[in-house]
Image (cartoon, rainbow, N blue to C red; front, top):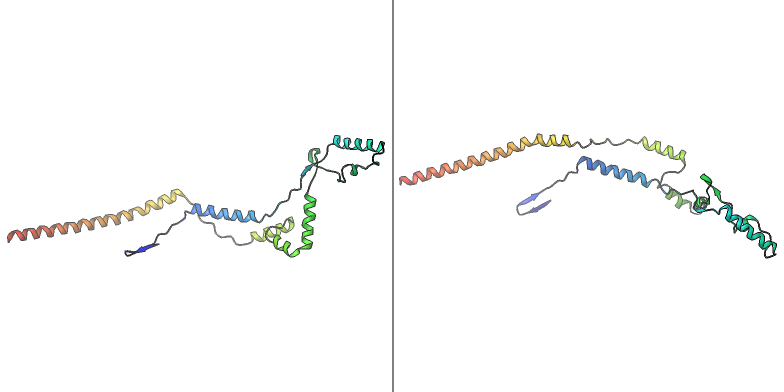
Length: 198
């Protein structure tokens, strides 16, 4: 809105319906994504030793034991106390930090239950049964009526429909202007003729 000595003028900007609908969909999509929360990875993080590597460790330990360098060692002692690797699809063996993550989350819940509860309320429940109930309750909420989609053909028809009114307005203004000009010229002619008599 701008103003001055000559008065004020108000300008209104309207957002097209198709752009407004797209913006609303993007905001709703972002809200849904923000409720997902952290998704932990339970696959292998570190590859396990191959059978040949394990056999090499065992042979080294057996030779050391044979010469009295160190006592006979178990397989776990040879692997530095590491538990056996987990076997995944395709025969791949490795170690996953998923169990360590779950253990840390459970321990955090025991030590700081209020903080964990407040954090969990920000996201969906990872429990499938509870998540379904929450999703069902969300569906029961009344949804706002969707706005009519933007149709460029219909919008053009509306613009064309309003044009004749504008043209009539402009034509009337031109006629009024021409009428005033004719009247002024007529008065000037009369005044000129009157002056010529004197």
